Each structure stands twice: as structure tokens, then as C-alpha cells.
Length: 106
Image 1: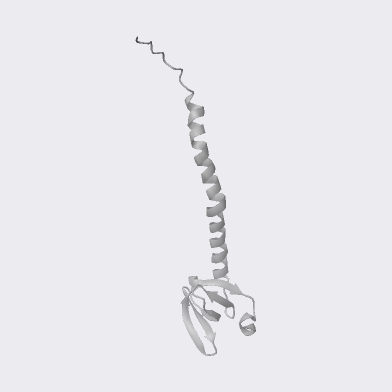
Image 2 (image 1 turned 60 degrees about the vertical axis):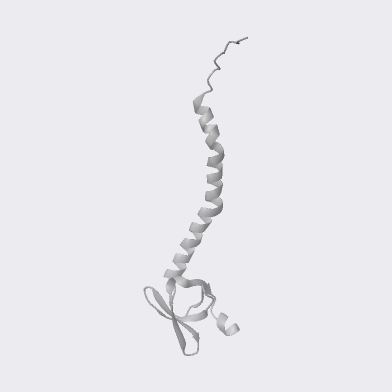
């Protein structure tokens, strides 16, 4: 009536541990190449563009203002959005550097 219990052979711990974490490692690698790396590249390009910003450049801000840079400070820039109309915006809000003459073409 009572059957004898037999002990099972233990599985090798090293290969089982690695096999359990392999999908997690693959997901992290995909996450790195598809999300983190492109974001870091974009941030590096944005920082370079902001450091090379010069008077007379035509830019678009994050809020959608289009204008010409008339003065550059450490944290703020003066943006001429129309003849004689100058606004102060944060330097970090500059999103896109436009080719020269874009504003006149609009």
C-alpha cells in the first residue's frame, strides 16, 4: 500500500540558472539597442546643436515659435519672431536648427 519514495537526481545548478535568466538578458539587450542607445544619441546631437548655436541662426522652439537668434546668453537666447519683436526663451527649448532663409520662404 505504501510505495517507496525514491530521491530524484539533482539538476546541474549552473546551466539551469543561466537558462532561467537568458530571456531576461535578451530582453535587456533589445531594450538597450531599441530605446536607450537611440535616446542617448539624440541627446548628444541636441547638446552639440545647442553649443554651436550662433547669432543669426533660424530655429524652432519646442513650443513651435519660429525665429532668428539675435542674442545668446548662458541659459537664455533672444529670439526675433517678427521685425522688432524679440522674445526671451530658454536655450534648452530650441528644438530644431533651420537652414538659412527658411523664415523668408514662409
